[in-house]
Image 1 (cartoon, one colour):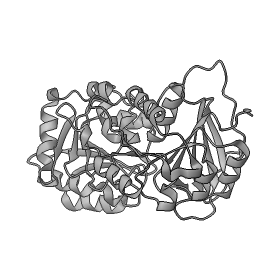
Image 2: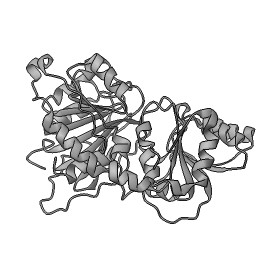
Image 3: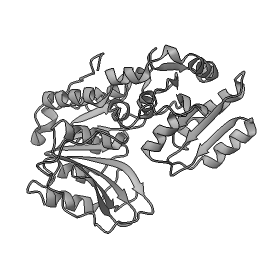
Image 4: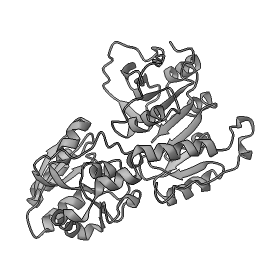
Length: 391
């Protein structure tokens, strides 16, 4: 066990709750590993949950990272590497913001992390109070800027948003909290996870999105039904309950769509499948800035995004794709398919949004934040630190 416990770590708590968790033989309360002194820096790979913490380790901000979530059953721990562990804590009350007595006890025994990241539906005030010495960072992941009640959000030191309107919402509720536009999915893009492979193009369109209503698959399907030529699409779904309804829509419209249903596939397989398509789409409106925006681009695909997307349109540039309204979606898709030479998506992401750029901004944010003062927090001075145009 490390003598420092969690105190030199970054911990990311997601809002995932596993309903049928299979424990792996290691209980959640297994102590944090002591980072190996001779280990090389980790590769920054994986999805949006992994990339920020691994980048923080790689950049030297912390010694190791852990990703936590909850289960309605037993808890467990898995060590992916000397740099990254995953813990599942048994859940006390199956309602958000989530609370786990086991998680609270673990923090009391091993200390609070140096940096605590809370995503989505959040955790209880008791968990955040136990981490009062941590730098506490929040990102809603989806379109609402704050998906937690004020008694929880008051403990945040930094809120990462996906658009200026979200920053304004945060400042209206908590003027003292620092905000910056840095959605964790697209901003920590990982060129080593998503990249061109030279696969043969089997599909005109790919949509990687949950089988849930807010992802607005209906916009894609309606556009395909209107298009002057027949297109073929692939929908890849990691989770969600709407697969049956979506299949019925496809049959009713007479369009050509293949499905990969929940629980989905690995990141490597997603990359392979993206390489089999010509264009990636993002159809949602009330959606956060989804990580798939820059993941498509790193695989070499131009992106057609709904012009009404609430967060993330800053990634749609002339070099990366087209933003189009729902009633003209098919025209933008065909334009992107027919003129790939007009786009340089991978090069643009590497220049602007790959994780080395963002972790450098993140480090500056931490250095510029007001000192922690938990006994008189209301006197802290707020600030808004927005990204430079080239970042």
